[in-house]
Amino acid sequence: MKNIDLKQKLTVLLNAAIFITGTISNVYFAFIALGYILTMLLVYLLGSRIKDAFINVGYIWVSKWAVFIVFLMLSGIFLPDVFLYSLAMFLVFNLSVNPASIMSHSGAKH
Image (cartoon, rainbow, N blue to C red):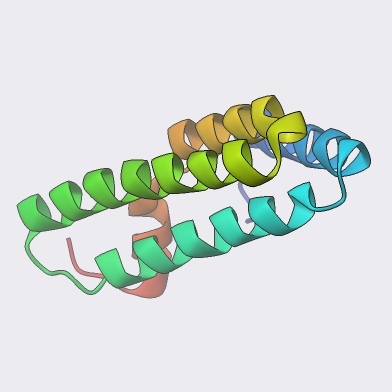
């Protein structure tokens, strides 16, 4: 994390702002947001164990958008007042987090 560039700093700041605003709006937003982030990190961790690059890309892509849909449905059903916060946070996270950087830190071979 020594060489975090401006784009990554802005992304973290944006995610933190959405997280704080959503949590102020409804405390339970924190649980769904943290659950989403932990689930995504688990998806990336499991993906780092796949050695074939094509299968890995397919797995990551399908998994991250499936998790996105499931958590967005959960927030829409159980926390409709923070649905837009969930949508914004999940989109920013999905579009900004690069699984290749996570996998390179965990020791996966590309």
